[in-house]
Length: 209
Length: 181
Image (tube, rainbow over all chains, first blue to last red; front, side, top):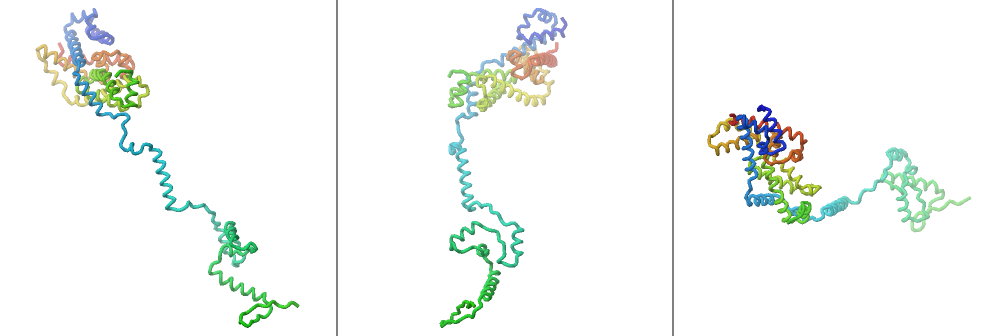
């Protein structure tokens, strides 16, 4: 057997057997007896491994294992150990819900009621409204809510036909309205105005023919 | 405290039972330590890696689905940590000149043995990682190739090939270190 062949077979043999079992393998043992070089190398490896194995499997002192357990224990937490803040908040989700509700309540408290979405008149409606010169003919958008509230304060017999009653009249329009009213009255009154003893003026209806 | 792994793990996880913790440690600390030592060789390094493996395992115990598989899971953690350790140490070893130590062969038998052991240790640590792991687990720990392949996540055939090349390289390294006739 050549040296190369010996080492190949020795390696294959060691795959499935212990180092010491090589001694019992006939052809390999025979080669070792003949070849001093391989014998020396083999001894070196087998002795080295045997010594290393002895070292590695040497029984350790009981205190070695105790120290190891203590060291490991000191570096791991008990699984049921809780952190300090977990004690304060035993139910974190309930606390989070309550906090969120409080924030929403605080928001509405300082910002008033939530705004209702209202429909403003379209731009072209407003332009059309002011294009009309006669305030009596202004076609204002109706507002049922306003009409309803006014009706409660007013006599049912009164008709809410005048549009300025619904929307209000601005100062600039009030003078015009007064003048227009006086003109209308003077046009309707045909008879002469009479003065009573107190000096107050009363209108007398014209006599019919 | 006795009981199977699953019972002990549940006792530790749900009740924080210290006896369950000690029982699990006592049951596996030697297995883990000797396995790791066959890979990293040094006692202190092996102790350090073993402790890290247990700490990692206990801190992640809730994630272990099959509690009965604790042993295999723990050994895999240990092997992976040992590999990481070797990778780090190999970088430091690379800084040391190899040939200087190889010249210190003494005639005395005891000294010779010590030298052989040291040479072998250094030669083992100089092997490529996979070869070193397989050779160490096979010849120092005596694991079968099936166990090795499972632990190292490789095919059995790959483990055998690594072993074969590892031994060949080891022989060359030993010869280089003064065992040449």
